[in-house]
Length: 474
Image 1 (tube, rainbow, N blue to C red):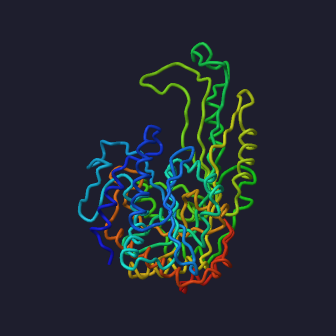
Image 2: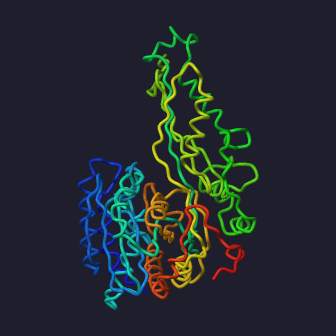
């Protein structure tokens, strides 16, 4: 059983760093966090520990390679965290980790410092006990995940050979509950676009000009109203042409083990679903694409009335993509459609801000088998397989640049409050996560490196045998 005292003390120190990547003023604190993490990794026995500067926050890399006949595991994590706002809703200060009951409360306790630290603690305990690891290990820990990892791709390309491994492990996802672990095997891709409409040169008096010219804000509302049809489908021509079809066996598995419509509605705080016809809400958020309007700016925003016709308005659109949708192709279709429905009297500007491809990991990969056994050993029950509607950019980058799959071994719980006030980590799950990480390395160490070489994974077209979704997976 993992040592709670030895694991908790450094975790609490790690959580005290205000490493908020979204705040430009936090760069010195992020650098101090990276330096502390590197010192800690060196102290537990990792070799060749370095803090590498980027154009943004630094990256921490480390390795232990004393098993030349064994496979190498690349452990990815991020030390940056979300802003803690609103501070008034925190019961205890977000950067003063506090233990209440079975939880430690702090920003980053679950996303991602706590989950990352399960692996750090597992390696510390293995090296303390035997001075050896059952497999080779490399760490890649960045400080910009919460702002989209803008410098990670360049870093991976530059250090591609140095980061070579048989597989990667990413712990930044959810389990179903403390007694039901889960392996996430699929992520949706993402495309973020800003639409800007411009009319006249400057804001105008609505009394003097209202009714005489096209209001950009009205034009924006008309465009937004044309994005969906009445059945919840996206109106962009060709948008669904390359959406891959999911087998009935997998859909049955999803209905059996995935969250119900009622659970999703309960977690969302609403009683009014609006999903695509013919699909459960879980399917709508995982195997079906989506287009979400995440922000609209235009006109007067202050208290009281103001008679004004705004000169410039904008909307932020977030598209979640599924296999086999390519972000570049969807971006082109979106631009063509927005241009076709925009009022001719207004000038249209479309800016693509971020794009990530969807990812699927083959459940037949040896690393998935190792994770399955590790969860079963540590938690006392086999994990279920889940699709996620979210996007983790590094998963696609690891496949595209390093050519390796990422095993998504999450240790967060649905009520951990990720990105919200009073974020927390369930300490019994944290300890089980340490045990799972250690057992995962042992399982990988029992596998020959050549077994990994013949199990590469396609970013979105990985096939899963039907036996996986009929309860016979071993």
